[in-house]
Image (cartoon, rainbow, N blue to C red; front, top):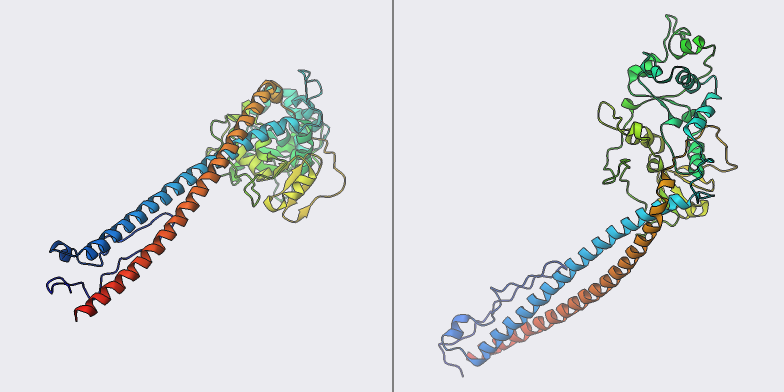
Length: 425
């Protein structure tokens, strides 16, 4: 029998073990002792001391395992972030290489004679003699740079077909077909005042054929027939997101499509709005509110239109397509559930081609080398993620096992304390 001045508490204080999450493991150290510290200090027994030491050791083990879990989770989060950034970089490189390989007859030398020039695009517009675009182009051909200073045309930036360029014939054909000839011939004005200057009405509400574009057409022996589209930049809703960093063309930083497994759909080449090259003379243009041609005109024409290598790849990516898609072999999805089938329509007004791709041919081999290196880094990261995940699962398993040991210890200690109290009575 133990001396009467050393007694165990009849109701031992329970150790509070907060149910762990993968990021926070807390063990209440203040309520750990099944035996009062005072009793131990006042000449306690070996049994009481053993219980207290075992309790503290189990708590230390749980705390250590909890810290390991947190460390592995932090490492796993960092590795996954690095992999996601690497995926985006690889995709950007694939898009860059894809634009080169997208042409059905890639250029292998410096001969640019087959590329459609701005002059050829202007000739195509001039064939539409009764269009507003044709009349404006004829005015520019006759008066040169002075045409832009006329009151009627000083607010006109140009015609849609002349304000952007593309890298190859396939893109020119598919983009022109997607927009249609009327949109390709649309006149682009900066402000609504410029729109009003193009057409006036008499007191009867009829078009005044002696003013605006109608009067200009008559002055050069032409007539303006039918309707024509005019796009007013200041009235468009511009793109409101971020831009690709350090990109001279100020391409839009659009969220790339992802399959359920997190991968980019095979065959995805990019967004049409970013495949339009804005001529250097127009890159500096901004509206009164500070937006350029890409985030106003071309964003409203193409929005999030996706471009794929083939029709089959485009159809397989349907779950990722929200605002239409086109493929280089003629596939076209106007919007969700709206497909354009049948033979391709040859639009006779197309975007001119840029020679930028020819000037960058030398960099493609370097890009391919970089992509091989990036893919190797990705594989290494994936192995690191697997290893870190295995370590995390092991730490969680050990924690759960140690927690069960602690729960059993609490139960045994409680039984011992109850028996001790009963024995003293």
